[in-house]
Each structure stands twice: as structure tokens, then as C-alpha cells.
Image (cartoon, rainbow, N blue to C red; front, top):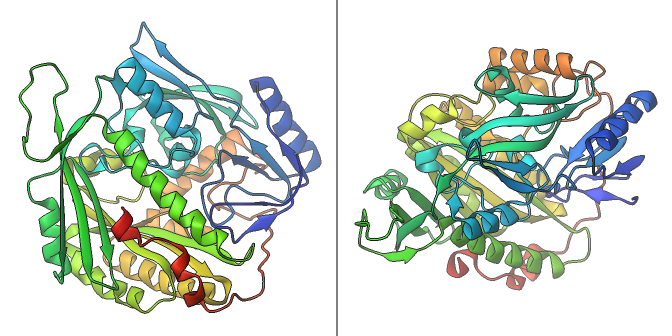
Length: 448
């Protein structure tokens, strides 16, 4: 394999010295051994859905998508899933075999290992926390220890792998606790505008939903909300809430919405010359009582040169926040309810730095209000920021574990310590006025 690669942000581009796709553990170990011999930094890559070049390296790209399998352990009743298995494939397997997971993210092409390396959050995290809460154990291939089988109950330090972006090794298999039956939900939709942020969040929380998908258009001050309550899928069971439409499988439902969004995004990129647009996005998790204060920082969205400028608003309630707290590198830093603001923008190169400066301001506001940023999007790629966000104890723990499994610092991942080989970054010439391209995409609110 060869050629120039980019990540989901489409702003960082590299031509790696080596690009390998091992299909067995021994081949993966050999690839890491060669990196050590050649002094190359290796980026472990699933589907490259992160930003900031975390899945890229000028040294070696190690594509782990061949570790793709799903099987049920009849003795333990747990699911053994290859780290390279796409989320969409996992959802379909669960549906066919009569099982489900409390939380699955929406991107169908993201691999399970990639999702866990980034954290793993979905629309049902409001009640159930991250997907990591369903993980019982992992099999990881590391540069120094080789293949390591981890029981998270007995080795809790390995919870730092969730949100580390491949810094500790390649996740080749995941042991998941599953539940019988599909996740049936009763969903209700509503639309309203001109509502203060605190009131809008109160409406989202009303009725204690188990599922929330809220889209806020800052230009029109329009909210479109879908909330749901879990139903017992057993025959003859009494619904928790009889109002609304019955959705037989909530994860399939969310995937369909995500697929529609991705199609509209691709339509925007197809309308522009190659290399002239980039994705810039971030999710900010703010304590729910600070939602109104964070709203002032969102006001410039209506004036920014953004395409698809919709804010995806989610919730994490108190009990779910308790589950997040088991994982030090995830975006919930205390046992309290949070509201998340996810901003996803397609931006012309001429405007990218301006938009990034605004995102920097949003980050500062979020941290000042006691929140955290979810690091799968744009964030400052240096250790000082990580320590500021997660605290010294978490980052010291991550660094100590990295030294155990990767003494030569071959693996990329969250930036701790000196960066031996940075990813290259290439930018094209400025784009024509963004208004010329805005008509290429459907309105996200109207099409969701």
C-alpha cells in the first residue's frame, strides 16, 4: 500500500514510509518490531475517523481492520468481537442473533477498536454511560509485551486505553457483556424555536428519557428533538411509555440517521474542488447547570462561515456520569449531569483558521465552566492541554503504562512526552466564497 493518506478532518495529509495491514497477531508483532528497527513512529488505524492526524504517521501506518470477527462465548454468555469489526456489522449481527448492547455509537464504518480508542459514546449514553462500561476484557498487542489478555476487573489501570487513541497498543479483540433481545424504544419528536438554552435543556430532560437526539440550528434558533423511552422487548410486556412511535432496534435507527448525514456531507465535498474543504468538529461536555452560560460562546455560530452548522446536543445524567468516572480519559470529570454540544462544520480553507480560533474559545469556556472536551475532534495536540483537562494523576498513569508497554515510544496516540515524528500537514489554496457551495447540501435540520 502507498500514497497520501488523510484522516476524517481532511486537513492533515501524510505519505507514510510504510503502510501495512497485518491479518494475524504474529504479522502485527512483526510490523511493530520493524518499526523499532527502523525508528519509525506507528499510527494504529481503523477507519481513520479521528481528527488532528491521530491515525496518521510519516513513519508507519498499521491498518488493523483485518482483525474482524464476531462470536458468542457460550460458557460466559459474552460476545468476542475483533477490534477491526465495523460498528454497522456489529449492530447487524446483534439484531440477527437476538442480542443488543446498551450503547453503540452511530458511525457504521468506524471499527470497534477505533471507537473504544476514542472513547465510545452514543445517544443512549444518557442513561448507560460509554460503551466501555460493557467491556469486560481486551486482547491487546503492544510493542514490548506482545499479546496481552486483559481482565479489566483485575487490571483496572488498563481503563486508560479508552480514549488513548492507540497509545497503548492495538486492540485486536474485545470481550463484551451483551443483553438478550433488541432495544425497543418509543420515540417522540418535537420542534420549537426561540427558547433560552436553559429552558431547552430542561425540556430535553423532561420525562427522564433513555435516548436523546437533539439538533439545534443557531442561525434559525430552531430545535428539533427526538426523545425515547426503552421498552421491554419480551412478548406481552407493558410498555414504559405508550406514546410515540415504536422503533424495534434503536441502534439501527440511529445508524440510518447517521448515514443520511454522511451522504449530505459527502455531497458538500463533491461540489468543491478536491482538497478545498475540511471538517472541523468538537464535542464539549458542560455541567448541565452551566448550559446557559455556555450558550453565549455558541452565539458566533450564526455568523461563522460554516456549512452544515448544526449543534448536536446530548445528555449524560447522573447515574451515567458515575459509569464515565471509571474511565479517566473520557469527557465527564465528576459525578453530575452533563450536556454535550457537538459542533460539526465543513469549512473552506480560507476560513479554517478563523473557525479553529472560535473552537479554541469554546474550549476555554468549556474548561472554565468545569467541563471537558471529547478528543475525537480538533484539540490542542500537546501534553500540557491533556494535563489541564484530565489532571496529573490520569496523565501520569497513562505515561507510566506507556513506558511498560512501549518503552521506545513507537506508538502514536494521545500526545504525551516528546513527539518523535510529527504528522505532515499540507494545505491547499483558499477556496472561493463559501456561499457558492452552501446550496450543494440539504439542510441538516430539515433532513434529519
